[in-house]
Image (cartoon, rainbow, N blue to C red; front, side, top):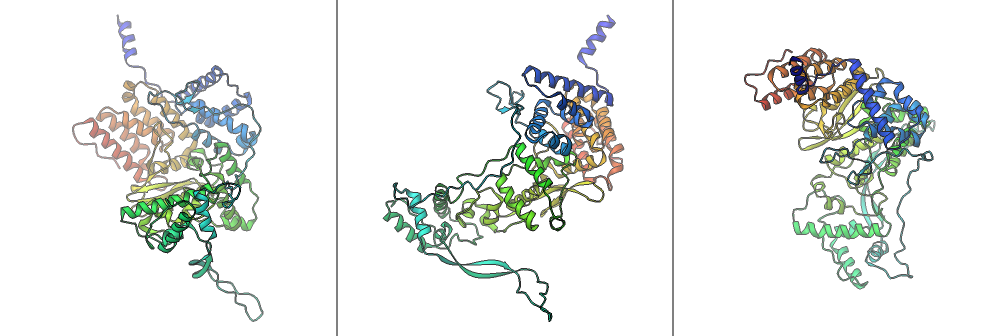
Length: 589
């Protein structure tokens, strides 16, 4: 009877795992076996030397098999990168970058029923598993300008509305406009005839003559009357625009309050925009995003580019090491900007050191996309959404944050936009060249500091992903500085904890938090999971003790009081949710 009772109890309360290094190793080993079994079941063949390479480094093995809900896409994505880029690039030269791309590429939106979203012959699973079939090595190609200029006066075919729109603009006499330019002061020479050092460039205004563009018509009532008459005379009396006189012009900054006027200006913008795209004066659509392999190949090519000492000084190159531990590279590998857009900015950076992380701030009109776009609609080689278009059209904080973060990523720096109350800022990973230490820093702050900043890049270290406060991403840099391998082991512990039956997690949460923070005191995903699993005040106090014992001594040069406060607030919120009676235990430090 006693034996039966013990067996019944063991069935109701599964044994809590021991949070030891050996237990983590066993967990990774089981996950590895299950992943390779899944490959065999699907008829997927992986080279033995590739599997052996993954196994050779314990931290890499744990990163591939140990902490994602489904390791199969990680493993296959890593192999897919190797097929495209070669074994030397992936295994020898850039293994951490490859891991980051493989892990980022393993994310897919979960299904509502909780099943894996990866396509395995099930039509409802829309995310195909990474392709590991044999194929030629990837050849990196930067797409050319996609515009195909249409002859809008082609006598061999009937001209349509858009032909006539373009013909009016391009057949019109040039107009004179005032523009602001930056000019260097004239050269001055000393008594020996040697040129003196020039001063800085200054802004000057000048009048120039240029072809008519759609924005000019939108800005001028007289040009609108000319345009309407021209379109009517050419068989399109239905085309008639009325945008007022100077309501929206090249340098407008005020928002348009008249709703009816906004509607007419919007229609005019759409008319000119459609004509420019249809006739090859603007791209028909934005260039496609690169694949993970193309994106990695592009970063690797830049990193391997031979630069002169002068170029390296001008560029402050390298801006960030691509052999950094993969957790601090995750913002970089998330970049999905089309290669043609990147290449234009990279080329200027390489050749001149130019790295423009800001644009023209244009005021309230930036909150009205159609008005902002209408004020400068004109032929252009890039589409809306590109940095180049943001430079042309300007914007407010959201545009500036996007210009800054995207430009930094083009320069090889992990970066993201970030939200503050009523403001958009940027954050980026920094590496101190002398110490090799990493830090997540903020830029373009306006309405507060780190404590009110939420990073827009995915928080990739738990199953929910999504946006998280700045301190979460700072904790990744601190964790890597402390012990990158220990951080990865703690992520595997988190997976082990998530694999426990829900009823077993409360009893295990304190020991789990202690063990994870022993591996790395900045193991934020594990600590938060322990807090969220606690079921009573005693368990919460135990987790708080673990935080105090392991994290509080570090909240100086190698830590953050904000992190301790964030976790303390999380504990208090959990206590309030549980309705635990009494007051919370005072924090020790």
